[in-house]
Each structure stands twice: as structure tokens, then as C-alpha cells.
Length: 310
Ligand code: GH3
Ligand code: MG
Ligand code: MG
Ligand code: MG
Image 1 (cartoon, protein in one colour):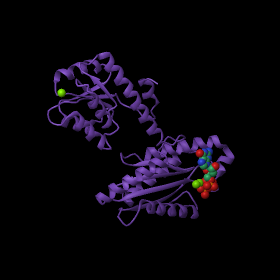
Image 2: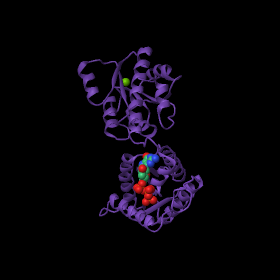
Image 3: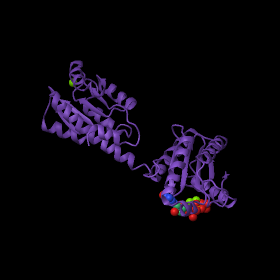
Image 4: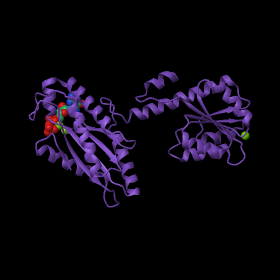
């Protein structure tokens, strides 16, 4: 796949590709800027320190990194970027006039993907950058596909597990409440029996859409937990805030107006929800919070479905 095809394959929009050029000599930056400015957004840095700041703040898609610079060297910049989970996946290409074997080997050892020698040949540098960008996009794409549920396009169970651990730690650190909402479609077996599996799938897609619409703060997460069961992570949200969110979810699912003549409690698709909230502590676990939400969901089913228990 070429770069354009790769960008189109992503399940979410990807902005223009960004390349960071790092060199202590502005004239070298200018040469590379000429090569890339028509096709990419070009970021620039004239020192190693500046390069690291730009990487943390702007997450370029690839870096062309000078080796010899006053202050911290290109090698050290690369080492630090590779040590930071936020920046370690950005491919680094060293641009250097030194082409000693040992130096090149060392560069690969600390995580570079390629070497380009100065003075740069514009055709070669452009071809190499495109190749490494394509590889990087492929690995980004695989990573994002691995975290998404194929049917409904919300996060999958694996992403949920990761995100729950991250939110738990963040809320524990800040002493803030974390809420989980677990929800399950009512009488969904009968829905499939009456309308067919394909319509069942369409219903799950519609419900996932309604959830995503209702749960939309930057650190919130909606995931498909299992067959017809979804879960929402609401960090920094207390019981009262969660109640508001849950009311919106219920209304959004009702507003879909999906007919369900096989339901024993009406003729529309409905959901049951279980909610649990706590400020994470070191003597409790995210699994215990999830289990608490599951118990509430079970209660909601027992008490007649189409309701929330908290
Ligand atoms: P309850 O109100 O107690 O939750 O009853 P239910 O019928 O929804 O619960 P049950 O667990 O008995 O059935 C869940 C159904 O969900 C059975 C299964 O075929 C269906 N299901 C699970 N995953 C999918 C899916 O990906 N697509 C479709 N169409 N159906 C699914
Ligand atoms: Mg230099
Ligand atoms: Mg069900
Ligand atoms: Mg179920």
C-alpha cells in the first residue's frame, strides 16, 4: 500500500504527516525542508534539547536527526526518545557525514531505522523517508485495529483492559472518582431469533453508535465487553455525574427506536445497566470495581430489565 492508501485505511482520520528535521546548521535544515515541504508538514529543531521537546509536544511521524550537535548528541536524543513510551514509536533516521561502520552499528543498536549521509541526495532521502513512513503507518494501523471491535468499531476488550488500568492509576494518583457502566441488551437472544443474526448485528452497531455519542469526554472509553454487552469507563466522574451520563445513554438507545416484538417488556430494544463508582485505593483493584458493576447489572436484570442499578 502507498501512503495515501494507508492513510485511508485507518478507522479514524489521520492529519497531515509530520516530519521533524533536526540539525544544528540551519543550512542543512533548509535543504531538507525544500525536499519535504510540498508533501508533509515540516517541523524543525536546531538542538537535541529542542528536538525532544518538539517530539513530546507534537509527536511527529518521523525524525531526520543530525548526529553531531553541540549540547546533547543525536545518539543521546535517540536514546531518550526510545526510553519514553510516548515517543519510542517515532522512527528515527540519522543524517550524518560520518559513515564509520562502528558508528552506524551503534546507531541501529539504539533504535534508528536508517542512515542517510550528507550531503543528502534529495531523491534518495525522499524515497527512504516515504518507505519508513509507510512502515510506521502500517504498524500504527495494526496497533489500532488490534484495539477495535470489528463489528461495532468501538474499543475491544483488550483496549478496555489497558484503558481501565491506566484510568485506575490516574484517578488513584489524583484522588478522583472512577465510574464504570456495564450494560447488556435485554432479550437479545429473542431479537436474533425473530429478526435474524444480521439484524442483530445491525442493532449492536446502532447501540454502539448511541453509546459513543453519549460518552464522549477525551478520557472516557466505550468498549464492547462481550457479545451484546458494552462497558463505559468514566474517569473523574462521581456517582451523580455518572447518573447523568447513564440517563443520556438510556435515552439515546430508546431514541434509536429499534423494534423488538420478541421482547417481554415492550416492543423496542432496551438495555439494562449496572454502575459502580469509587476513588481507587491501593487496597482495592479495578477488577473489584468491574465486579461491583456486574453485580448491579445482574440486579437490574433480576428487577425486570430496562433499568439502572447503582
Ligand atoms: P437478557 O435480557 O437476560 O440479557 O437476555 P438475552 O437474551 O439478551 O441474553 P443471553 O445471554 O441469553 O443472549 C445473548 C444473545 O446475544 C445470544 C447471542 O446469540 C447474541 N449475540 C452475542 N453476540 C452477538 C453478535 O455479535 N451478533 C448477534 N447478532 N448476536 C449476538
Ligand atoms: Mg551537526
Ligand atoms: Mg442480554
Ligand atoms: Mg449478555
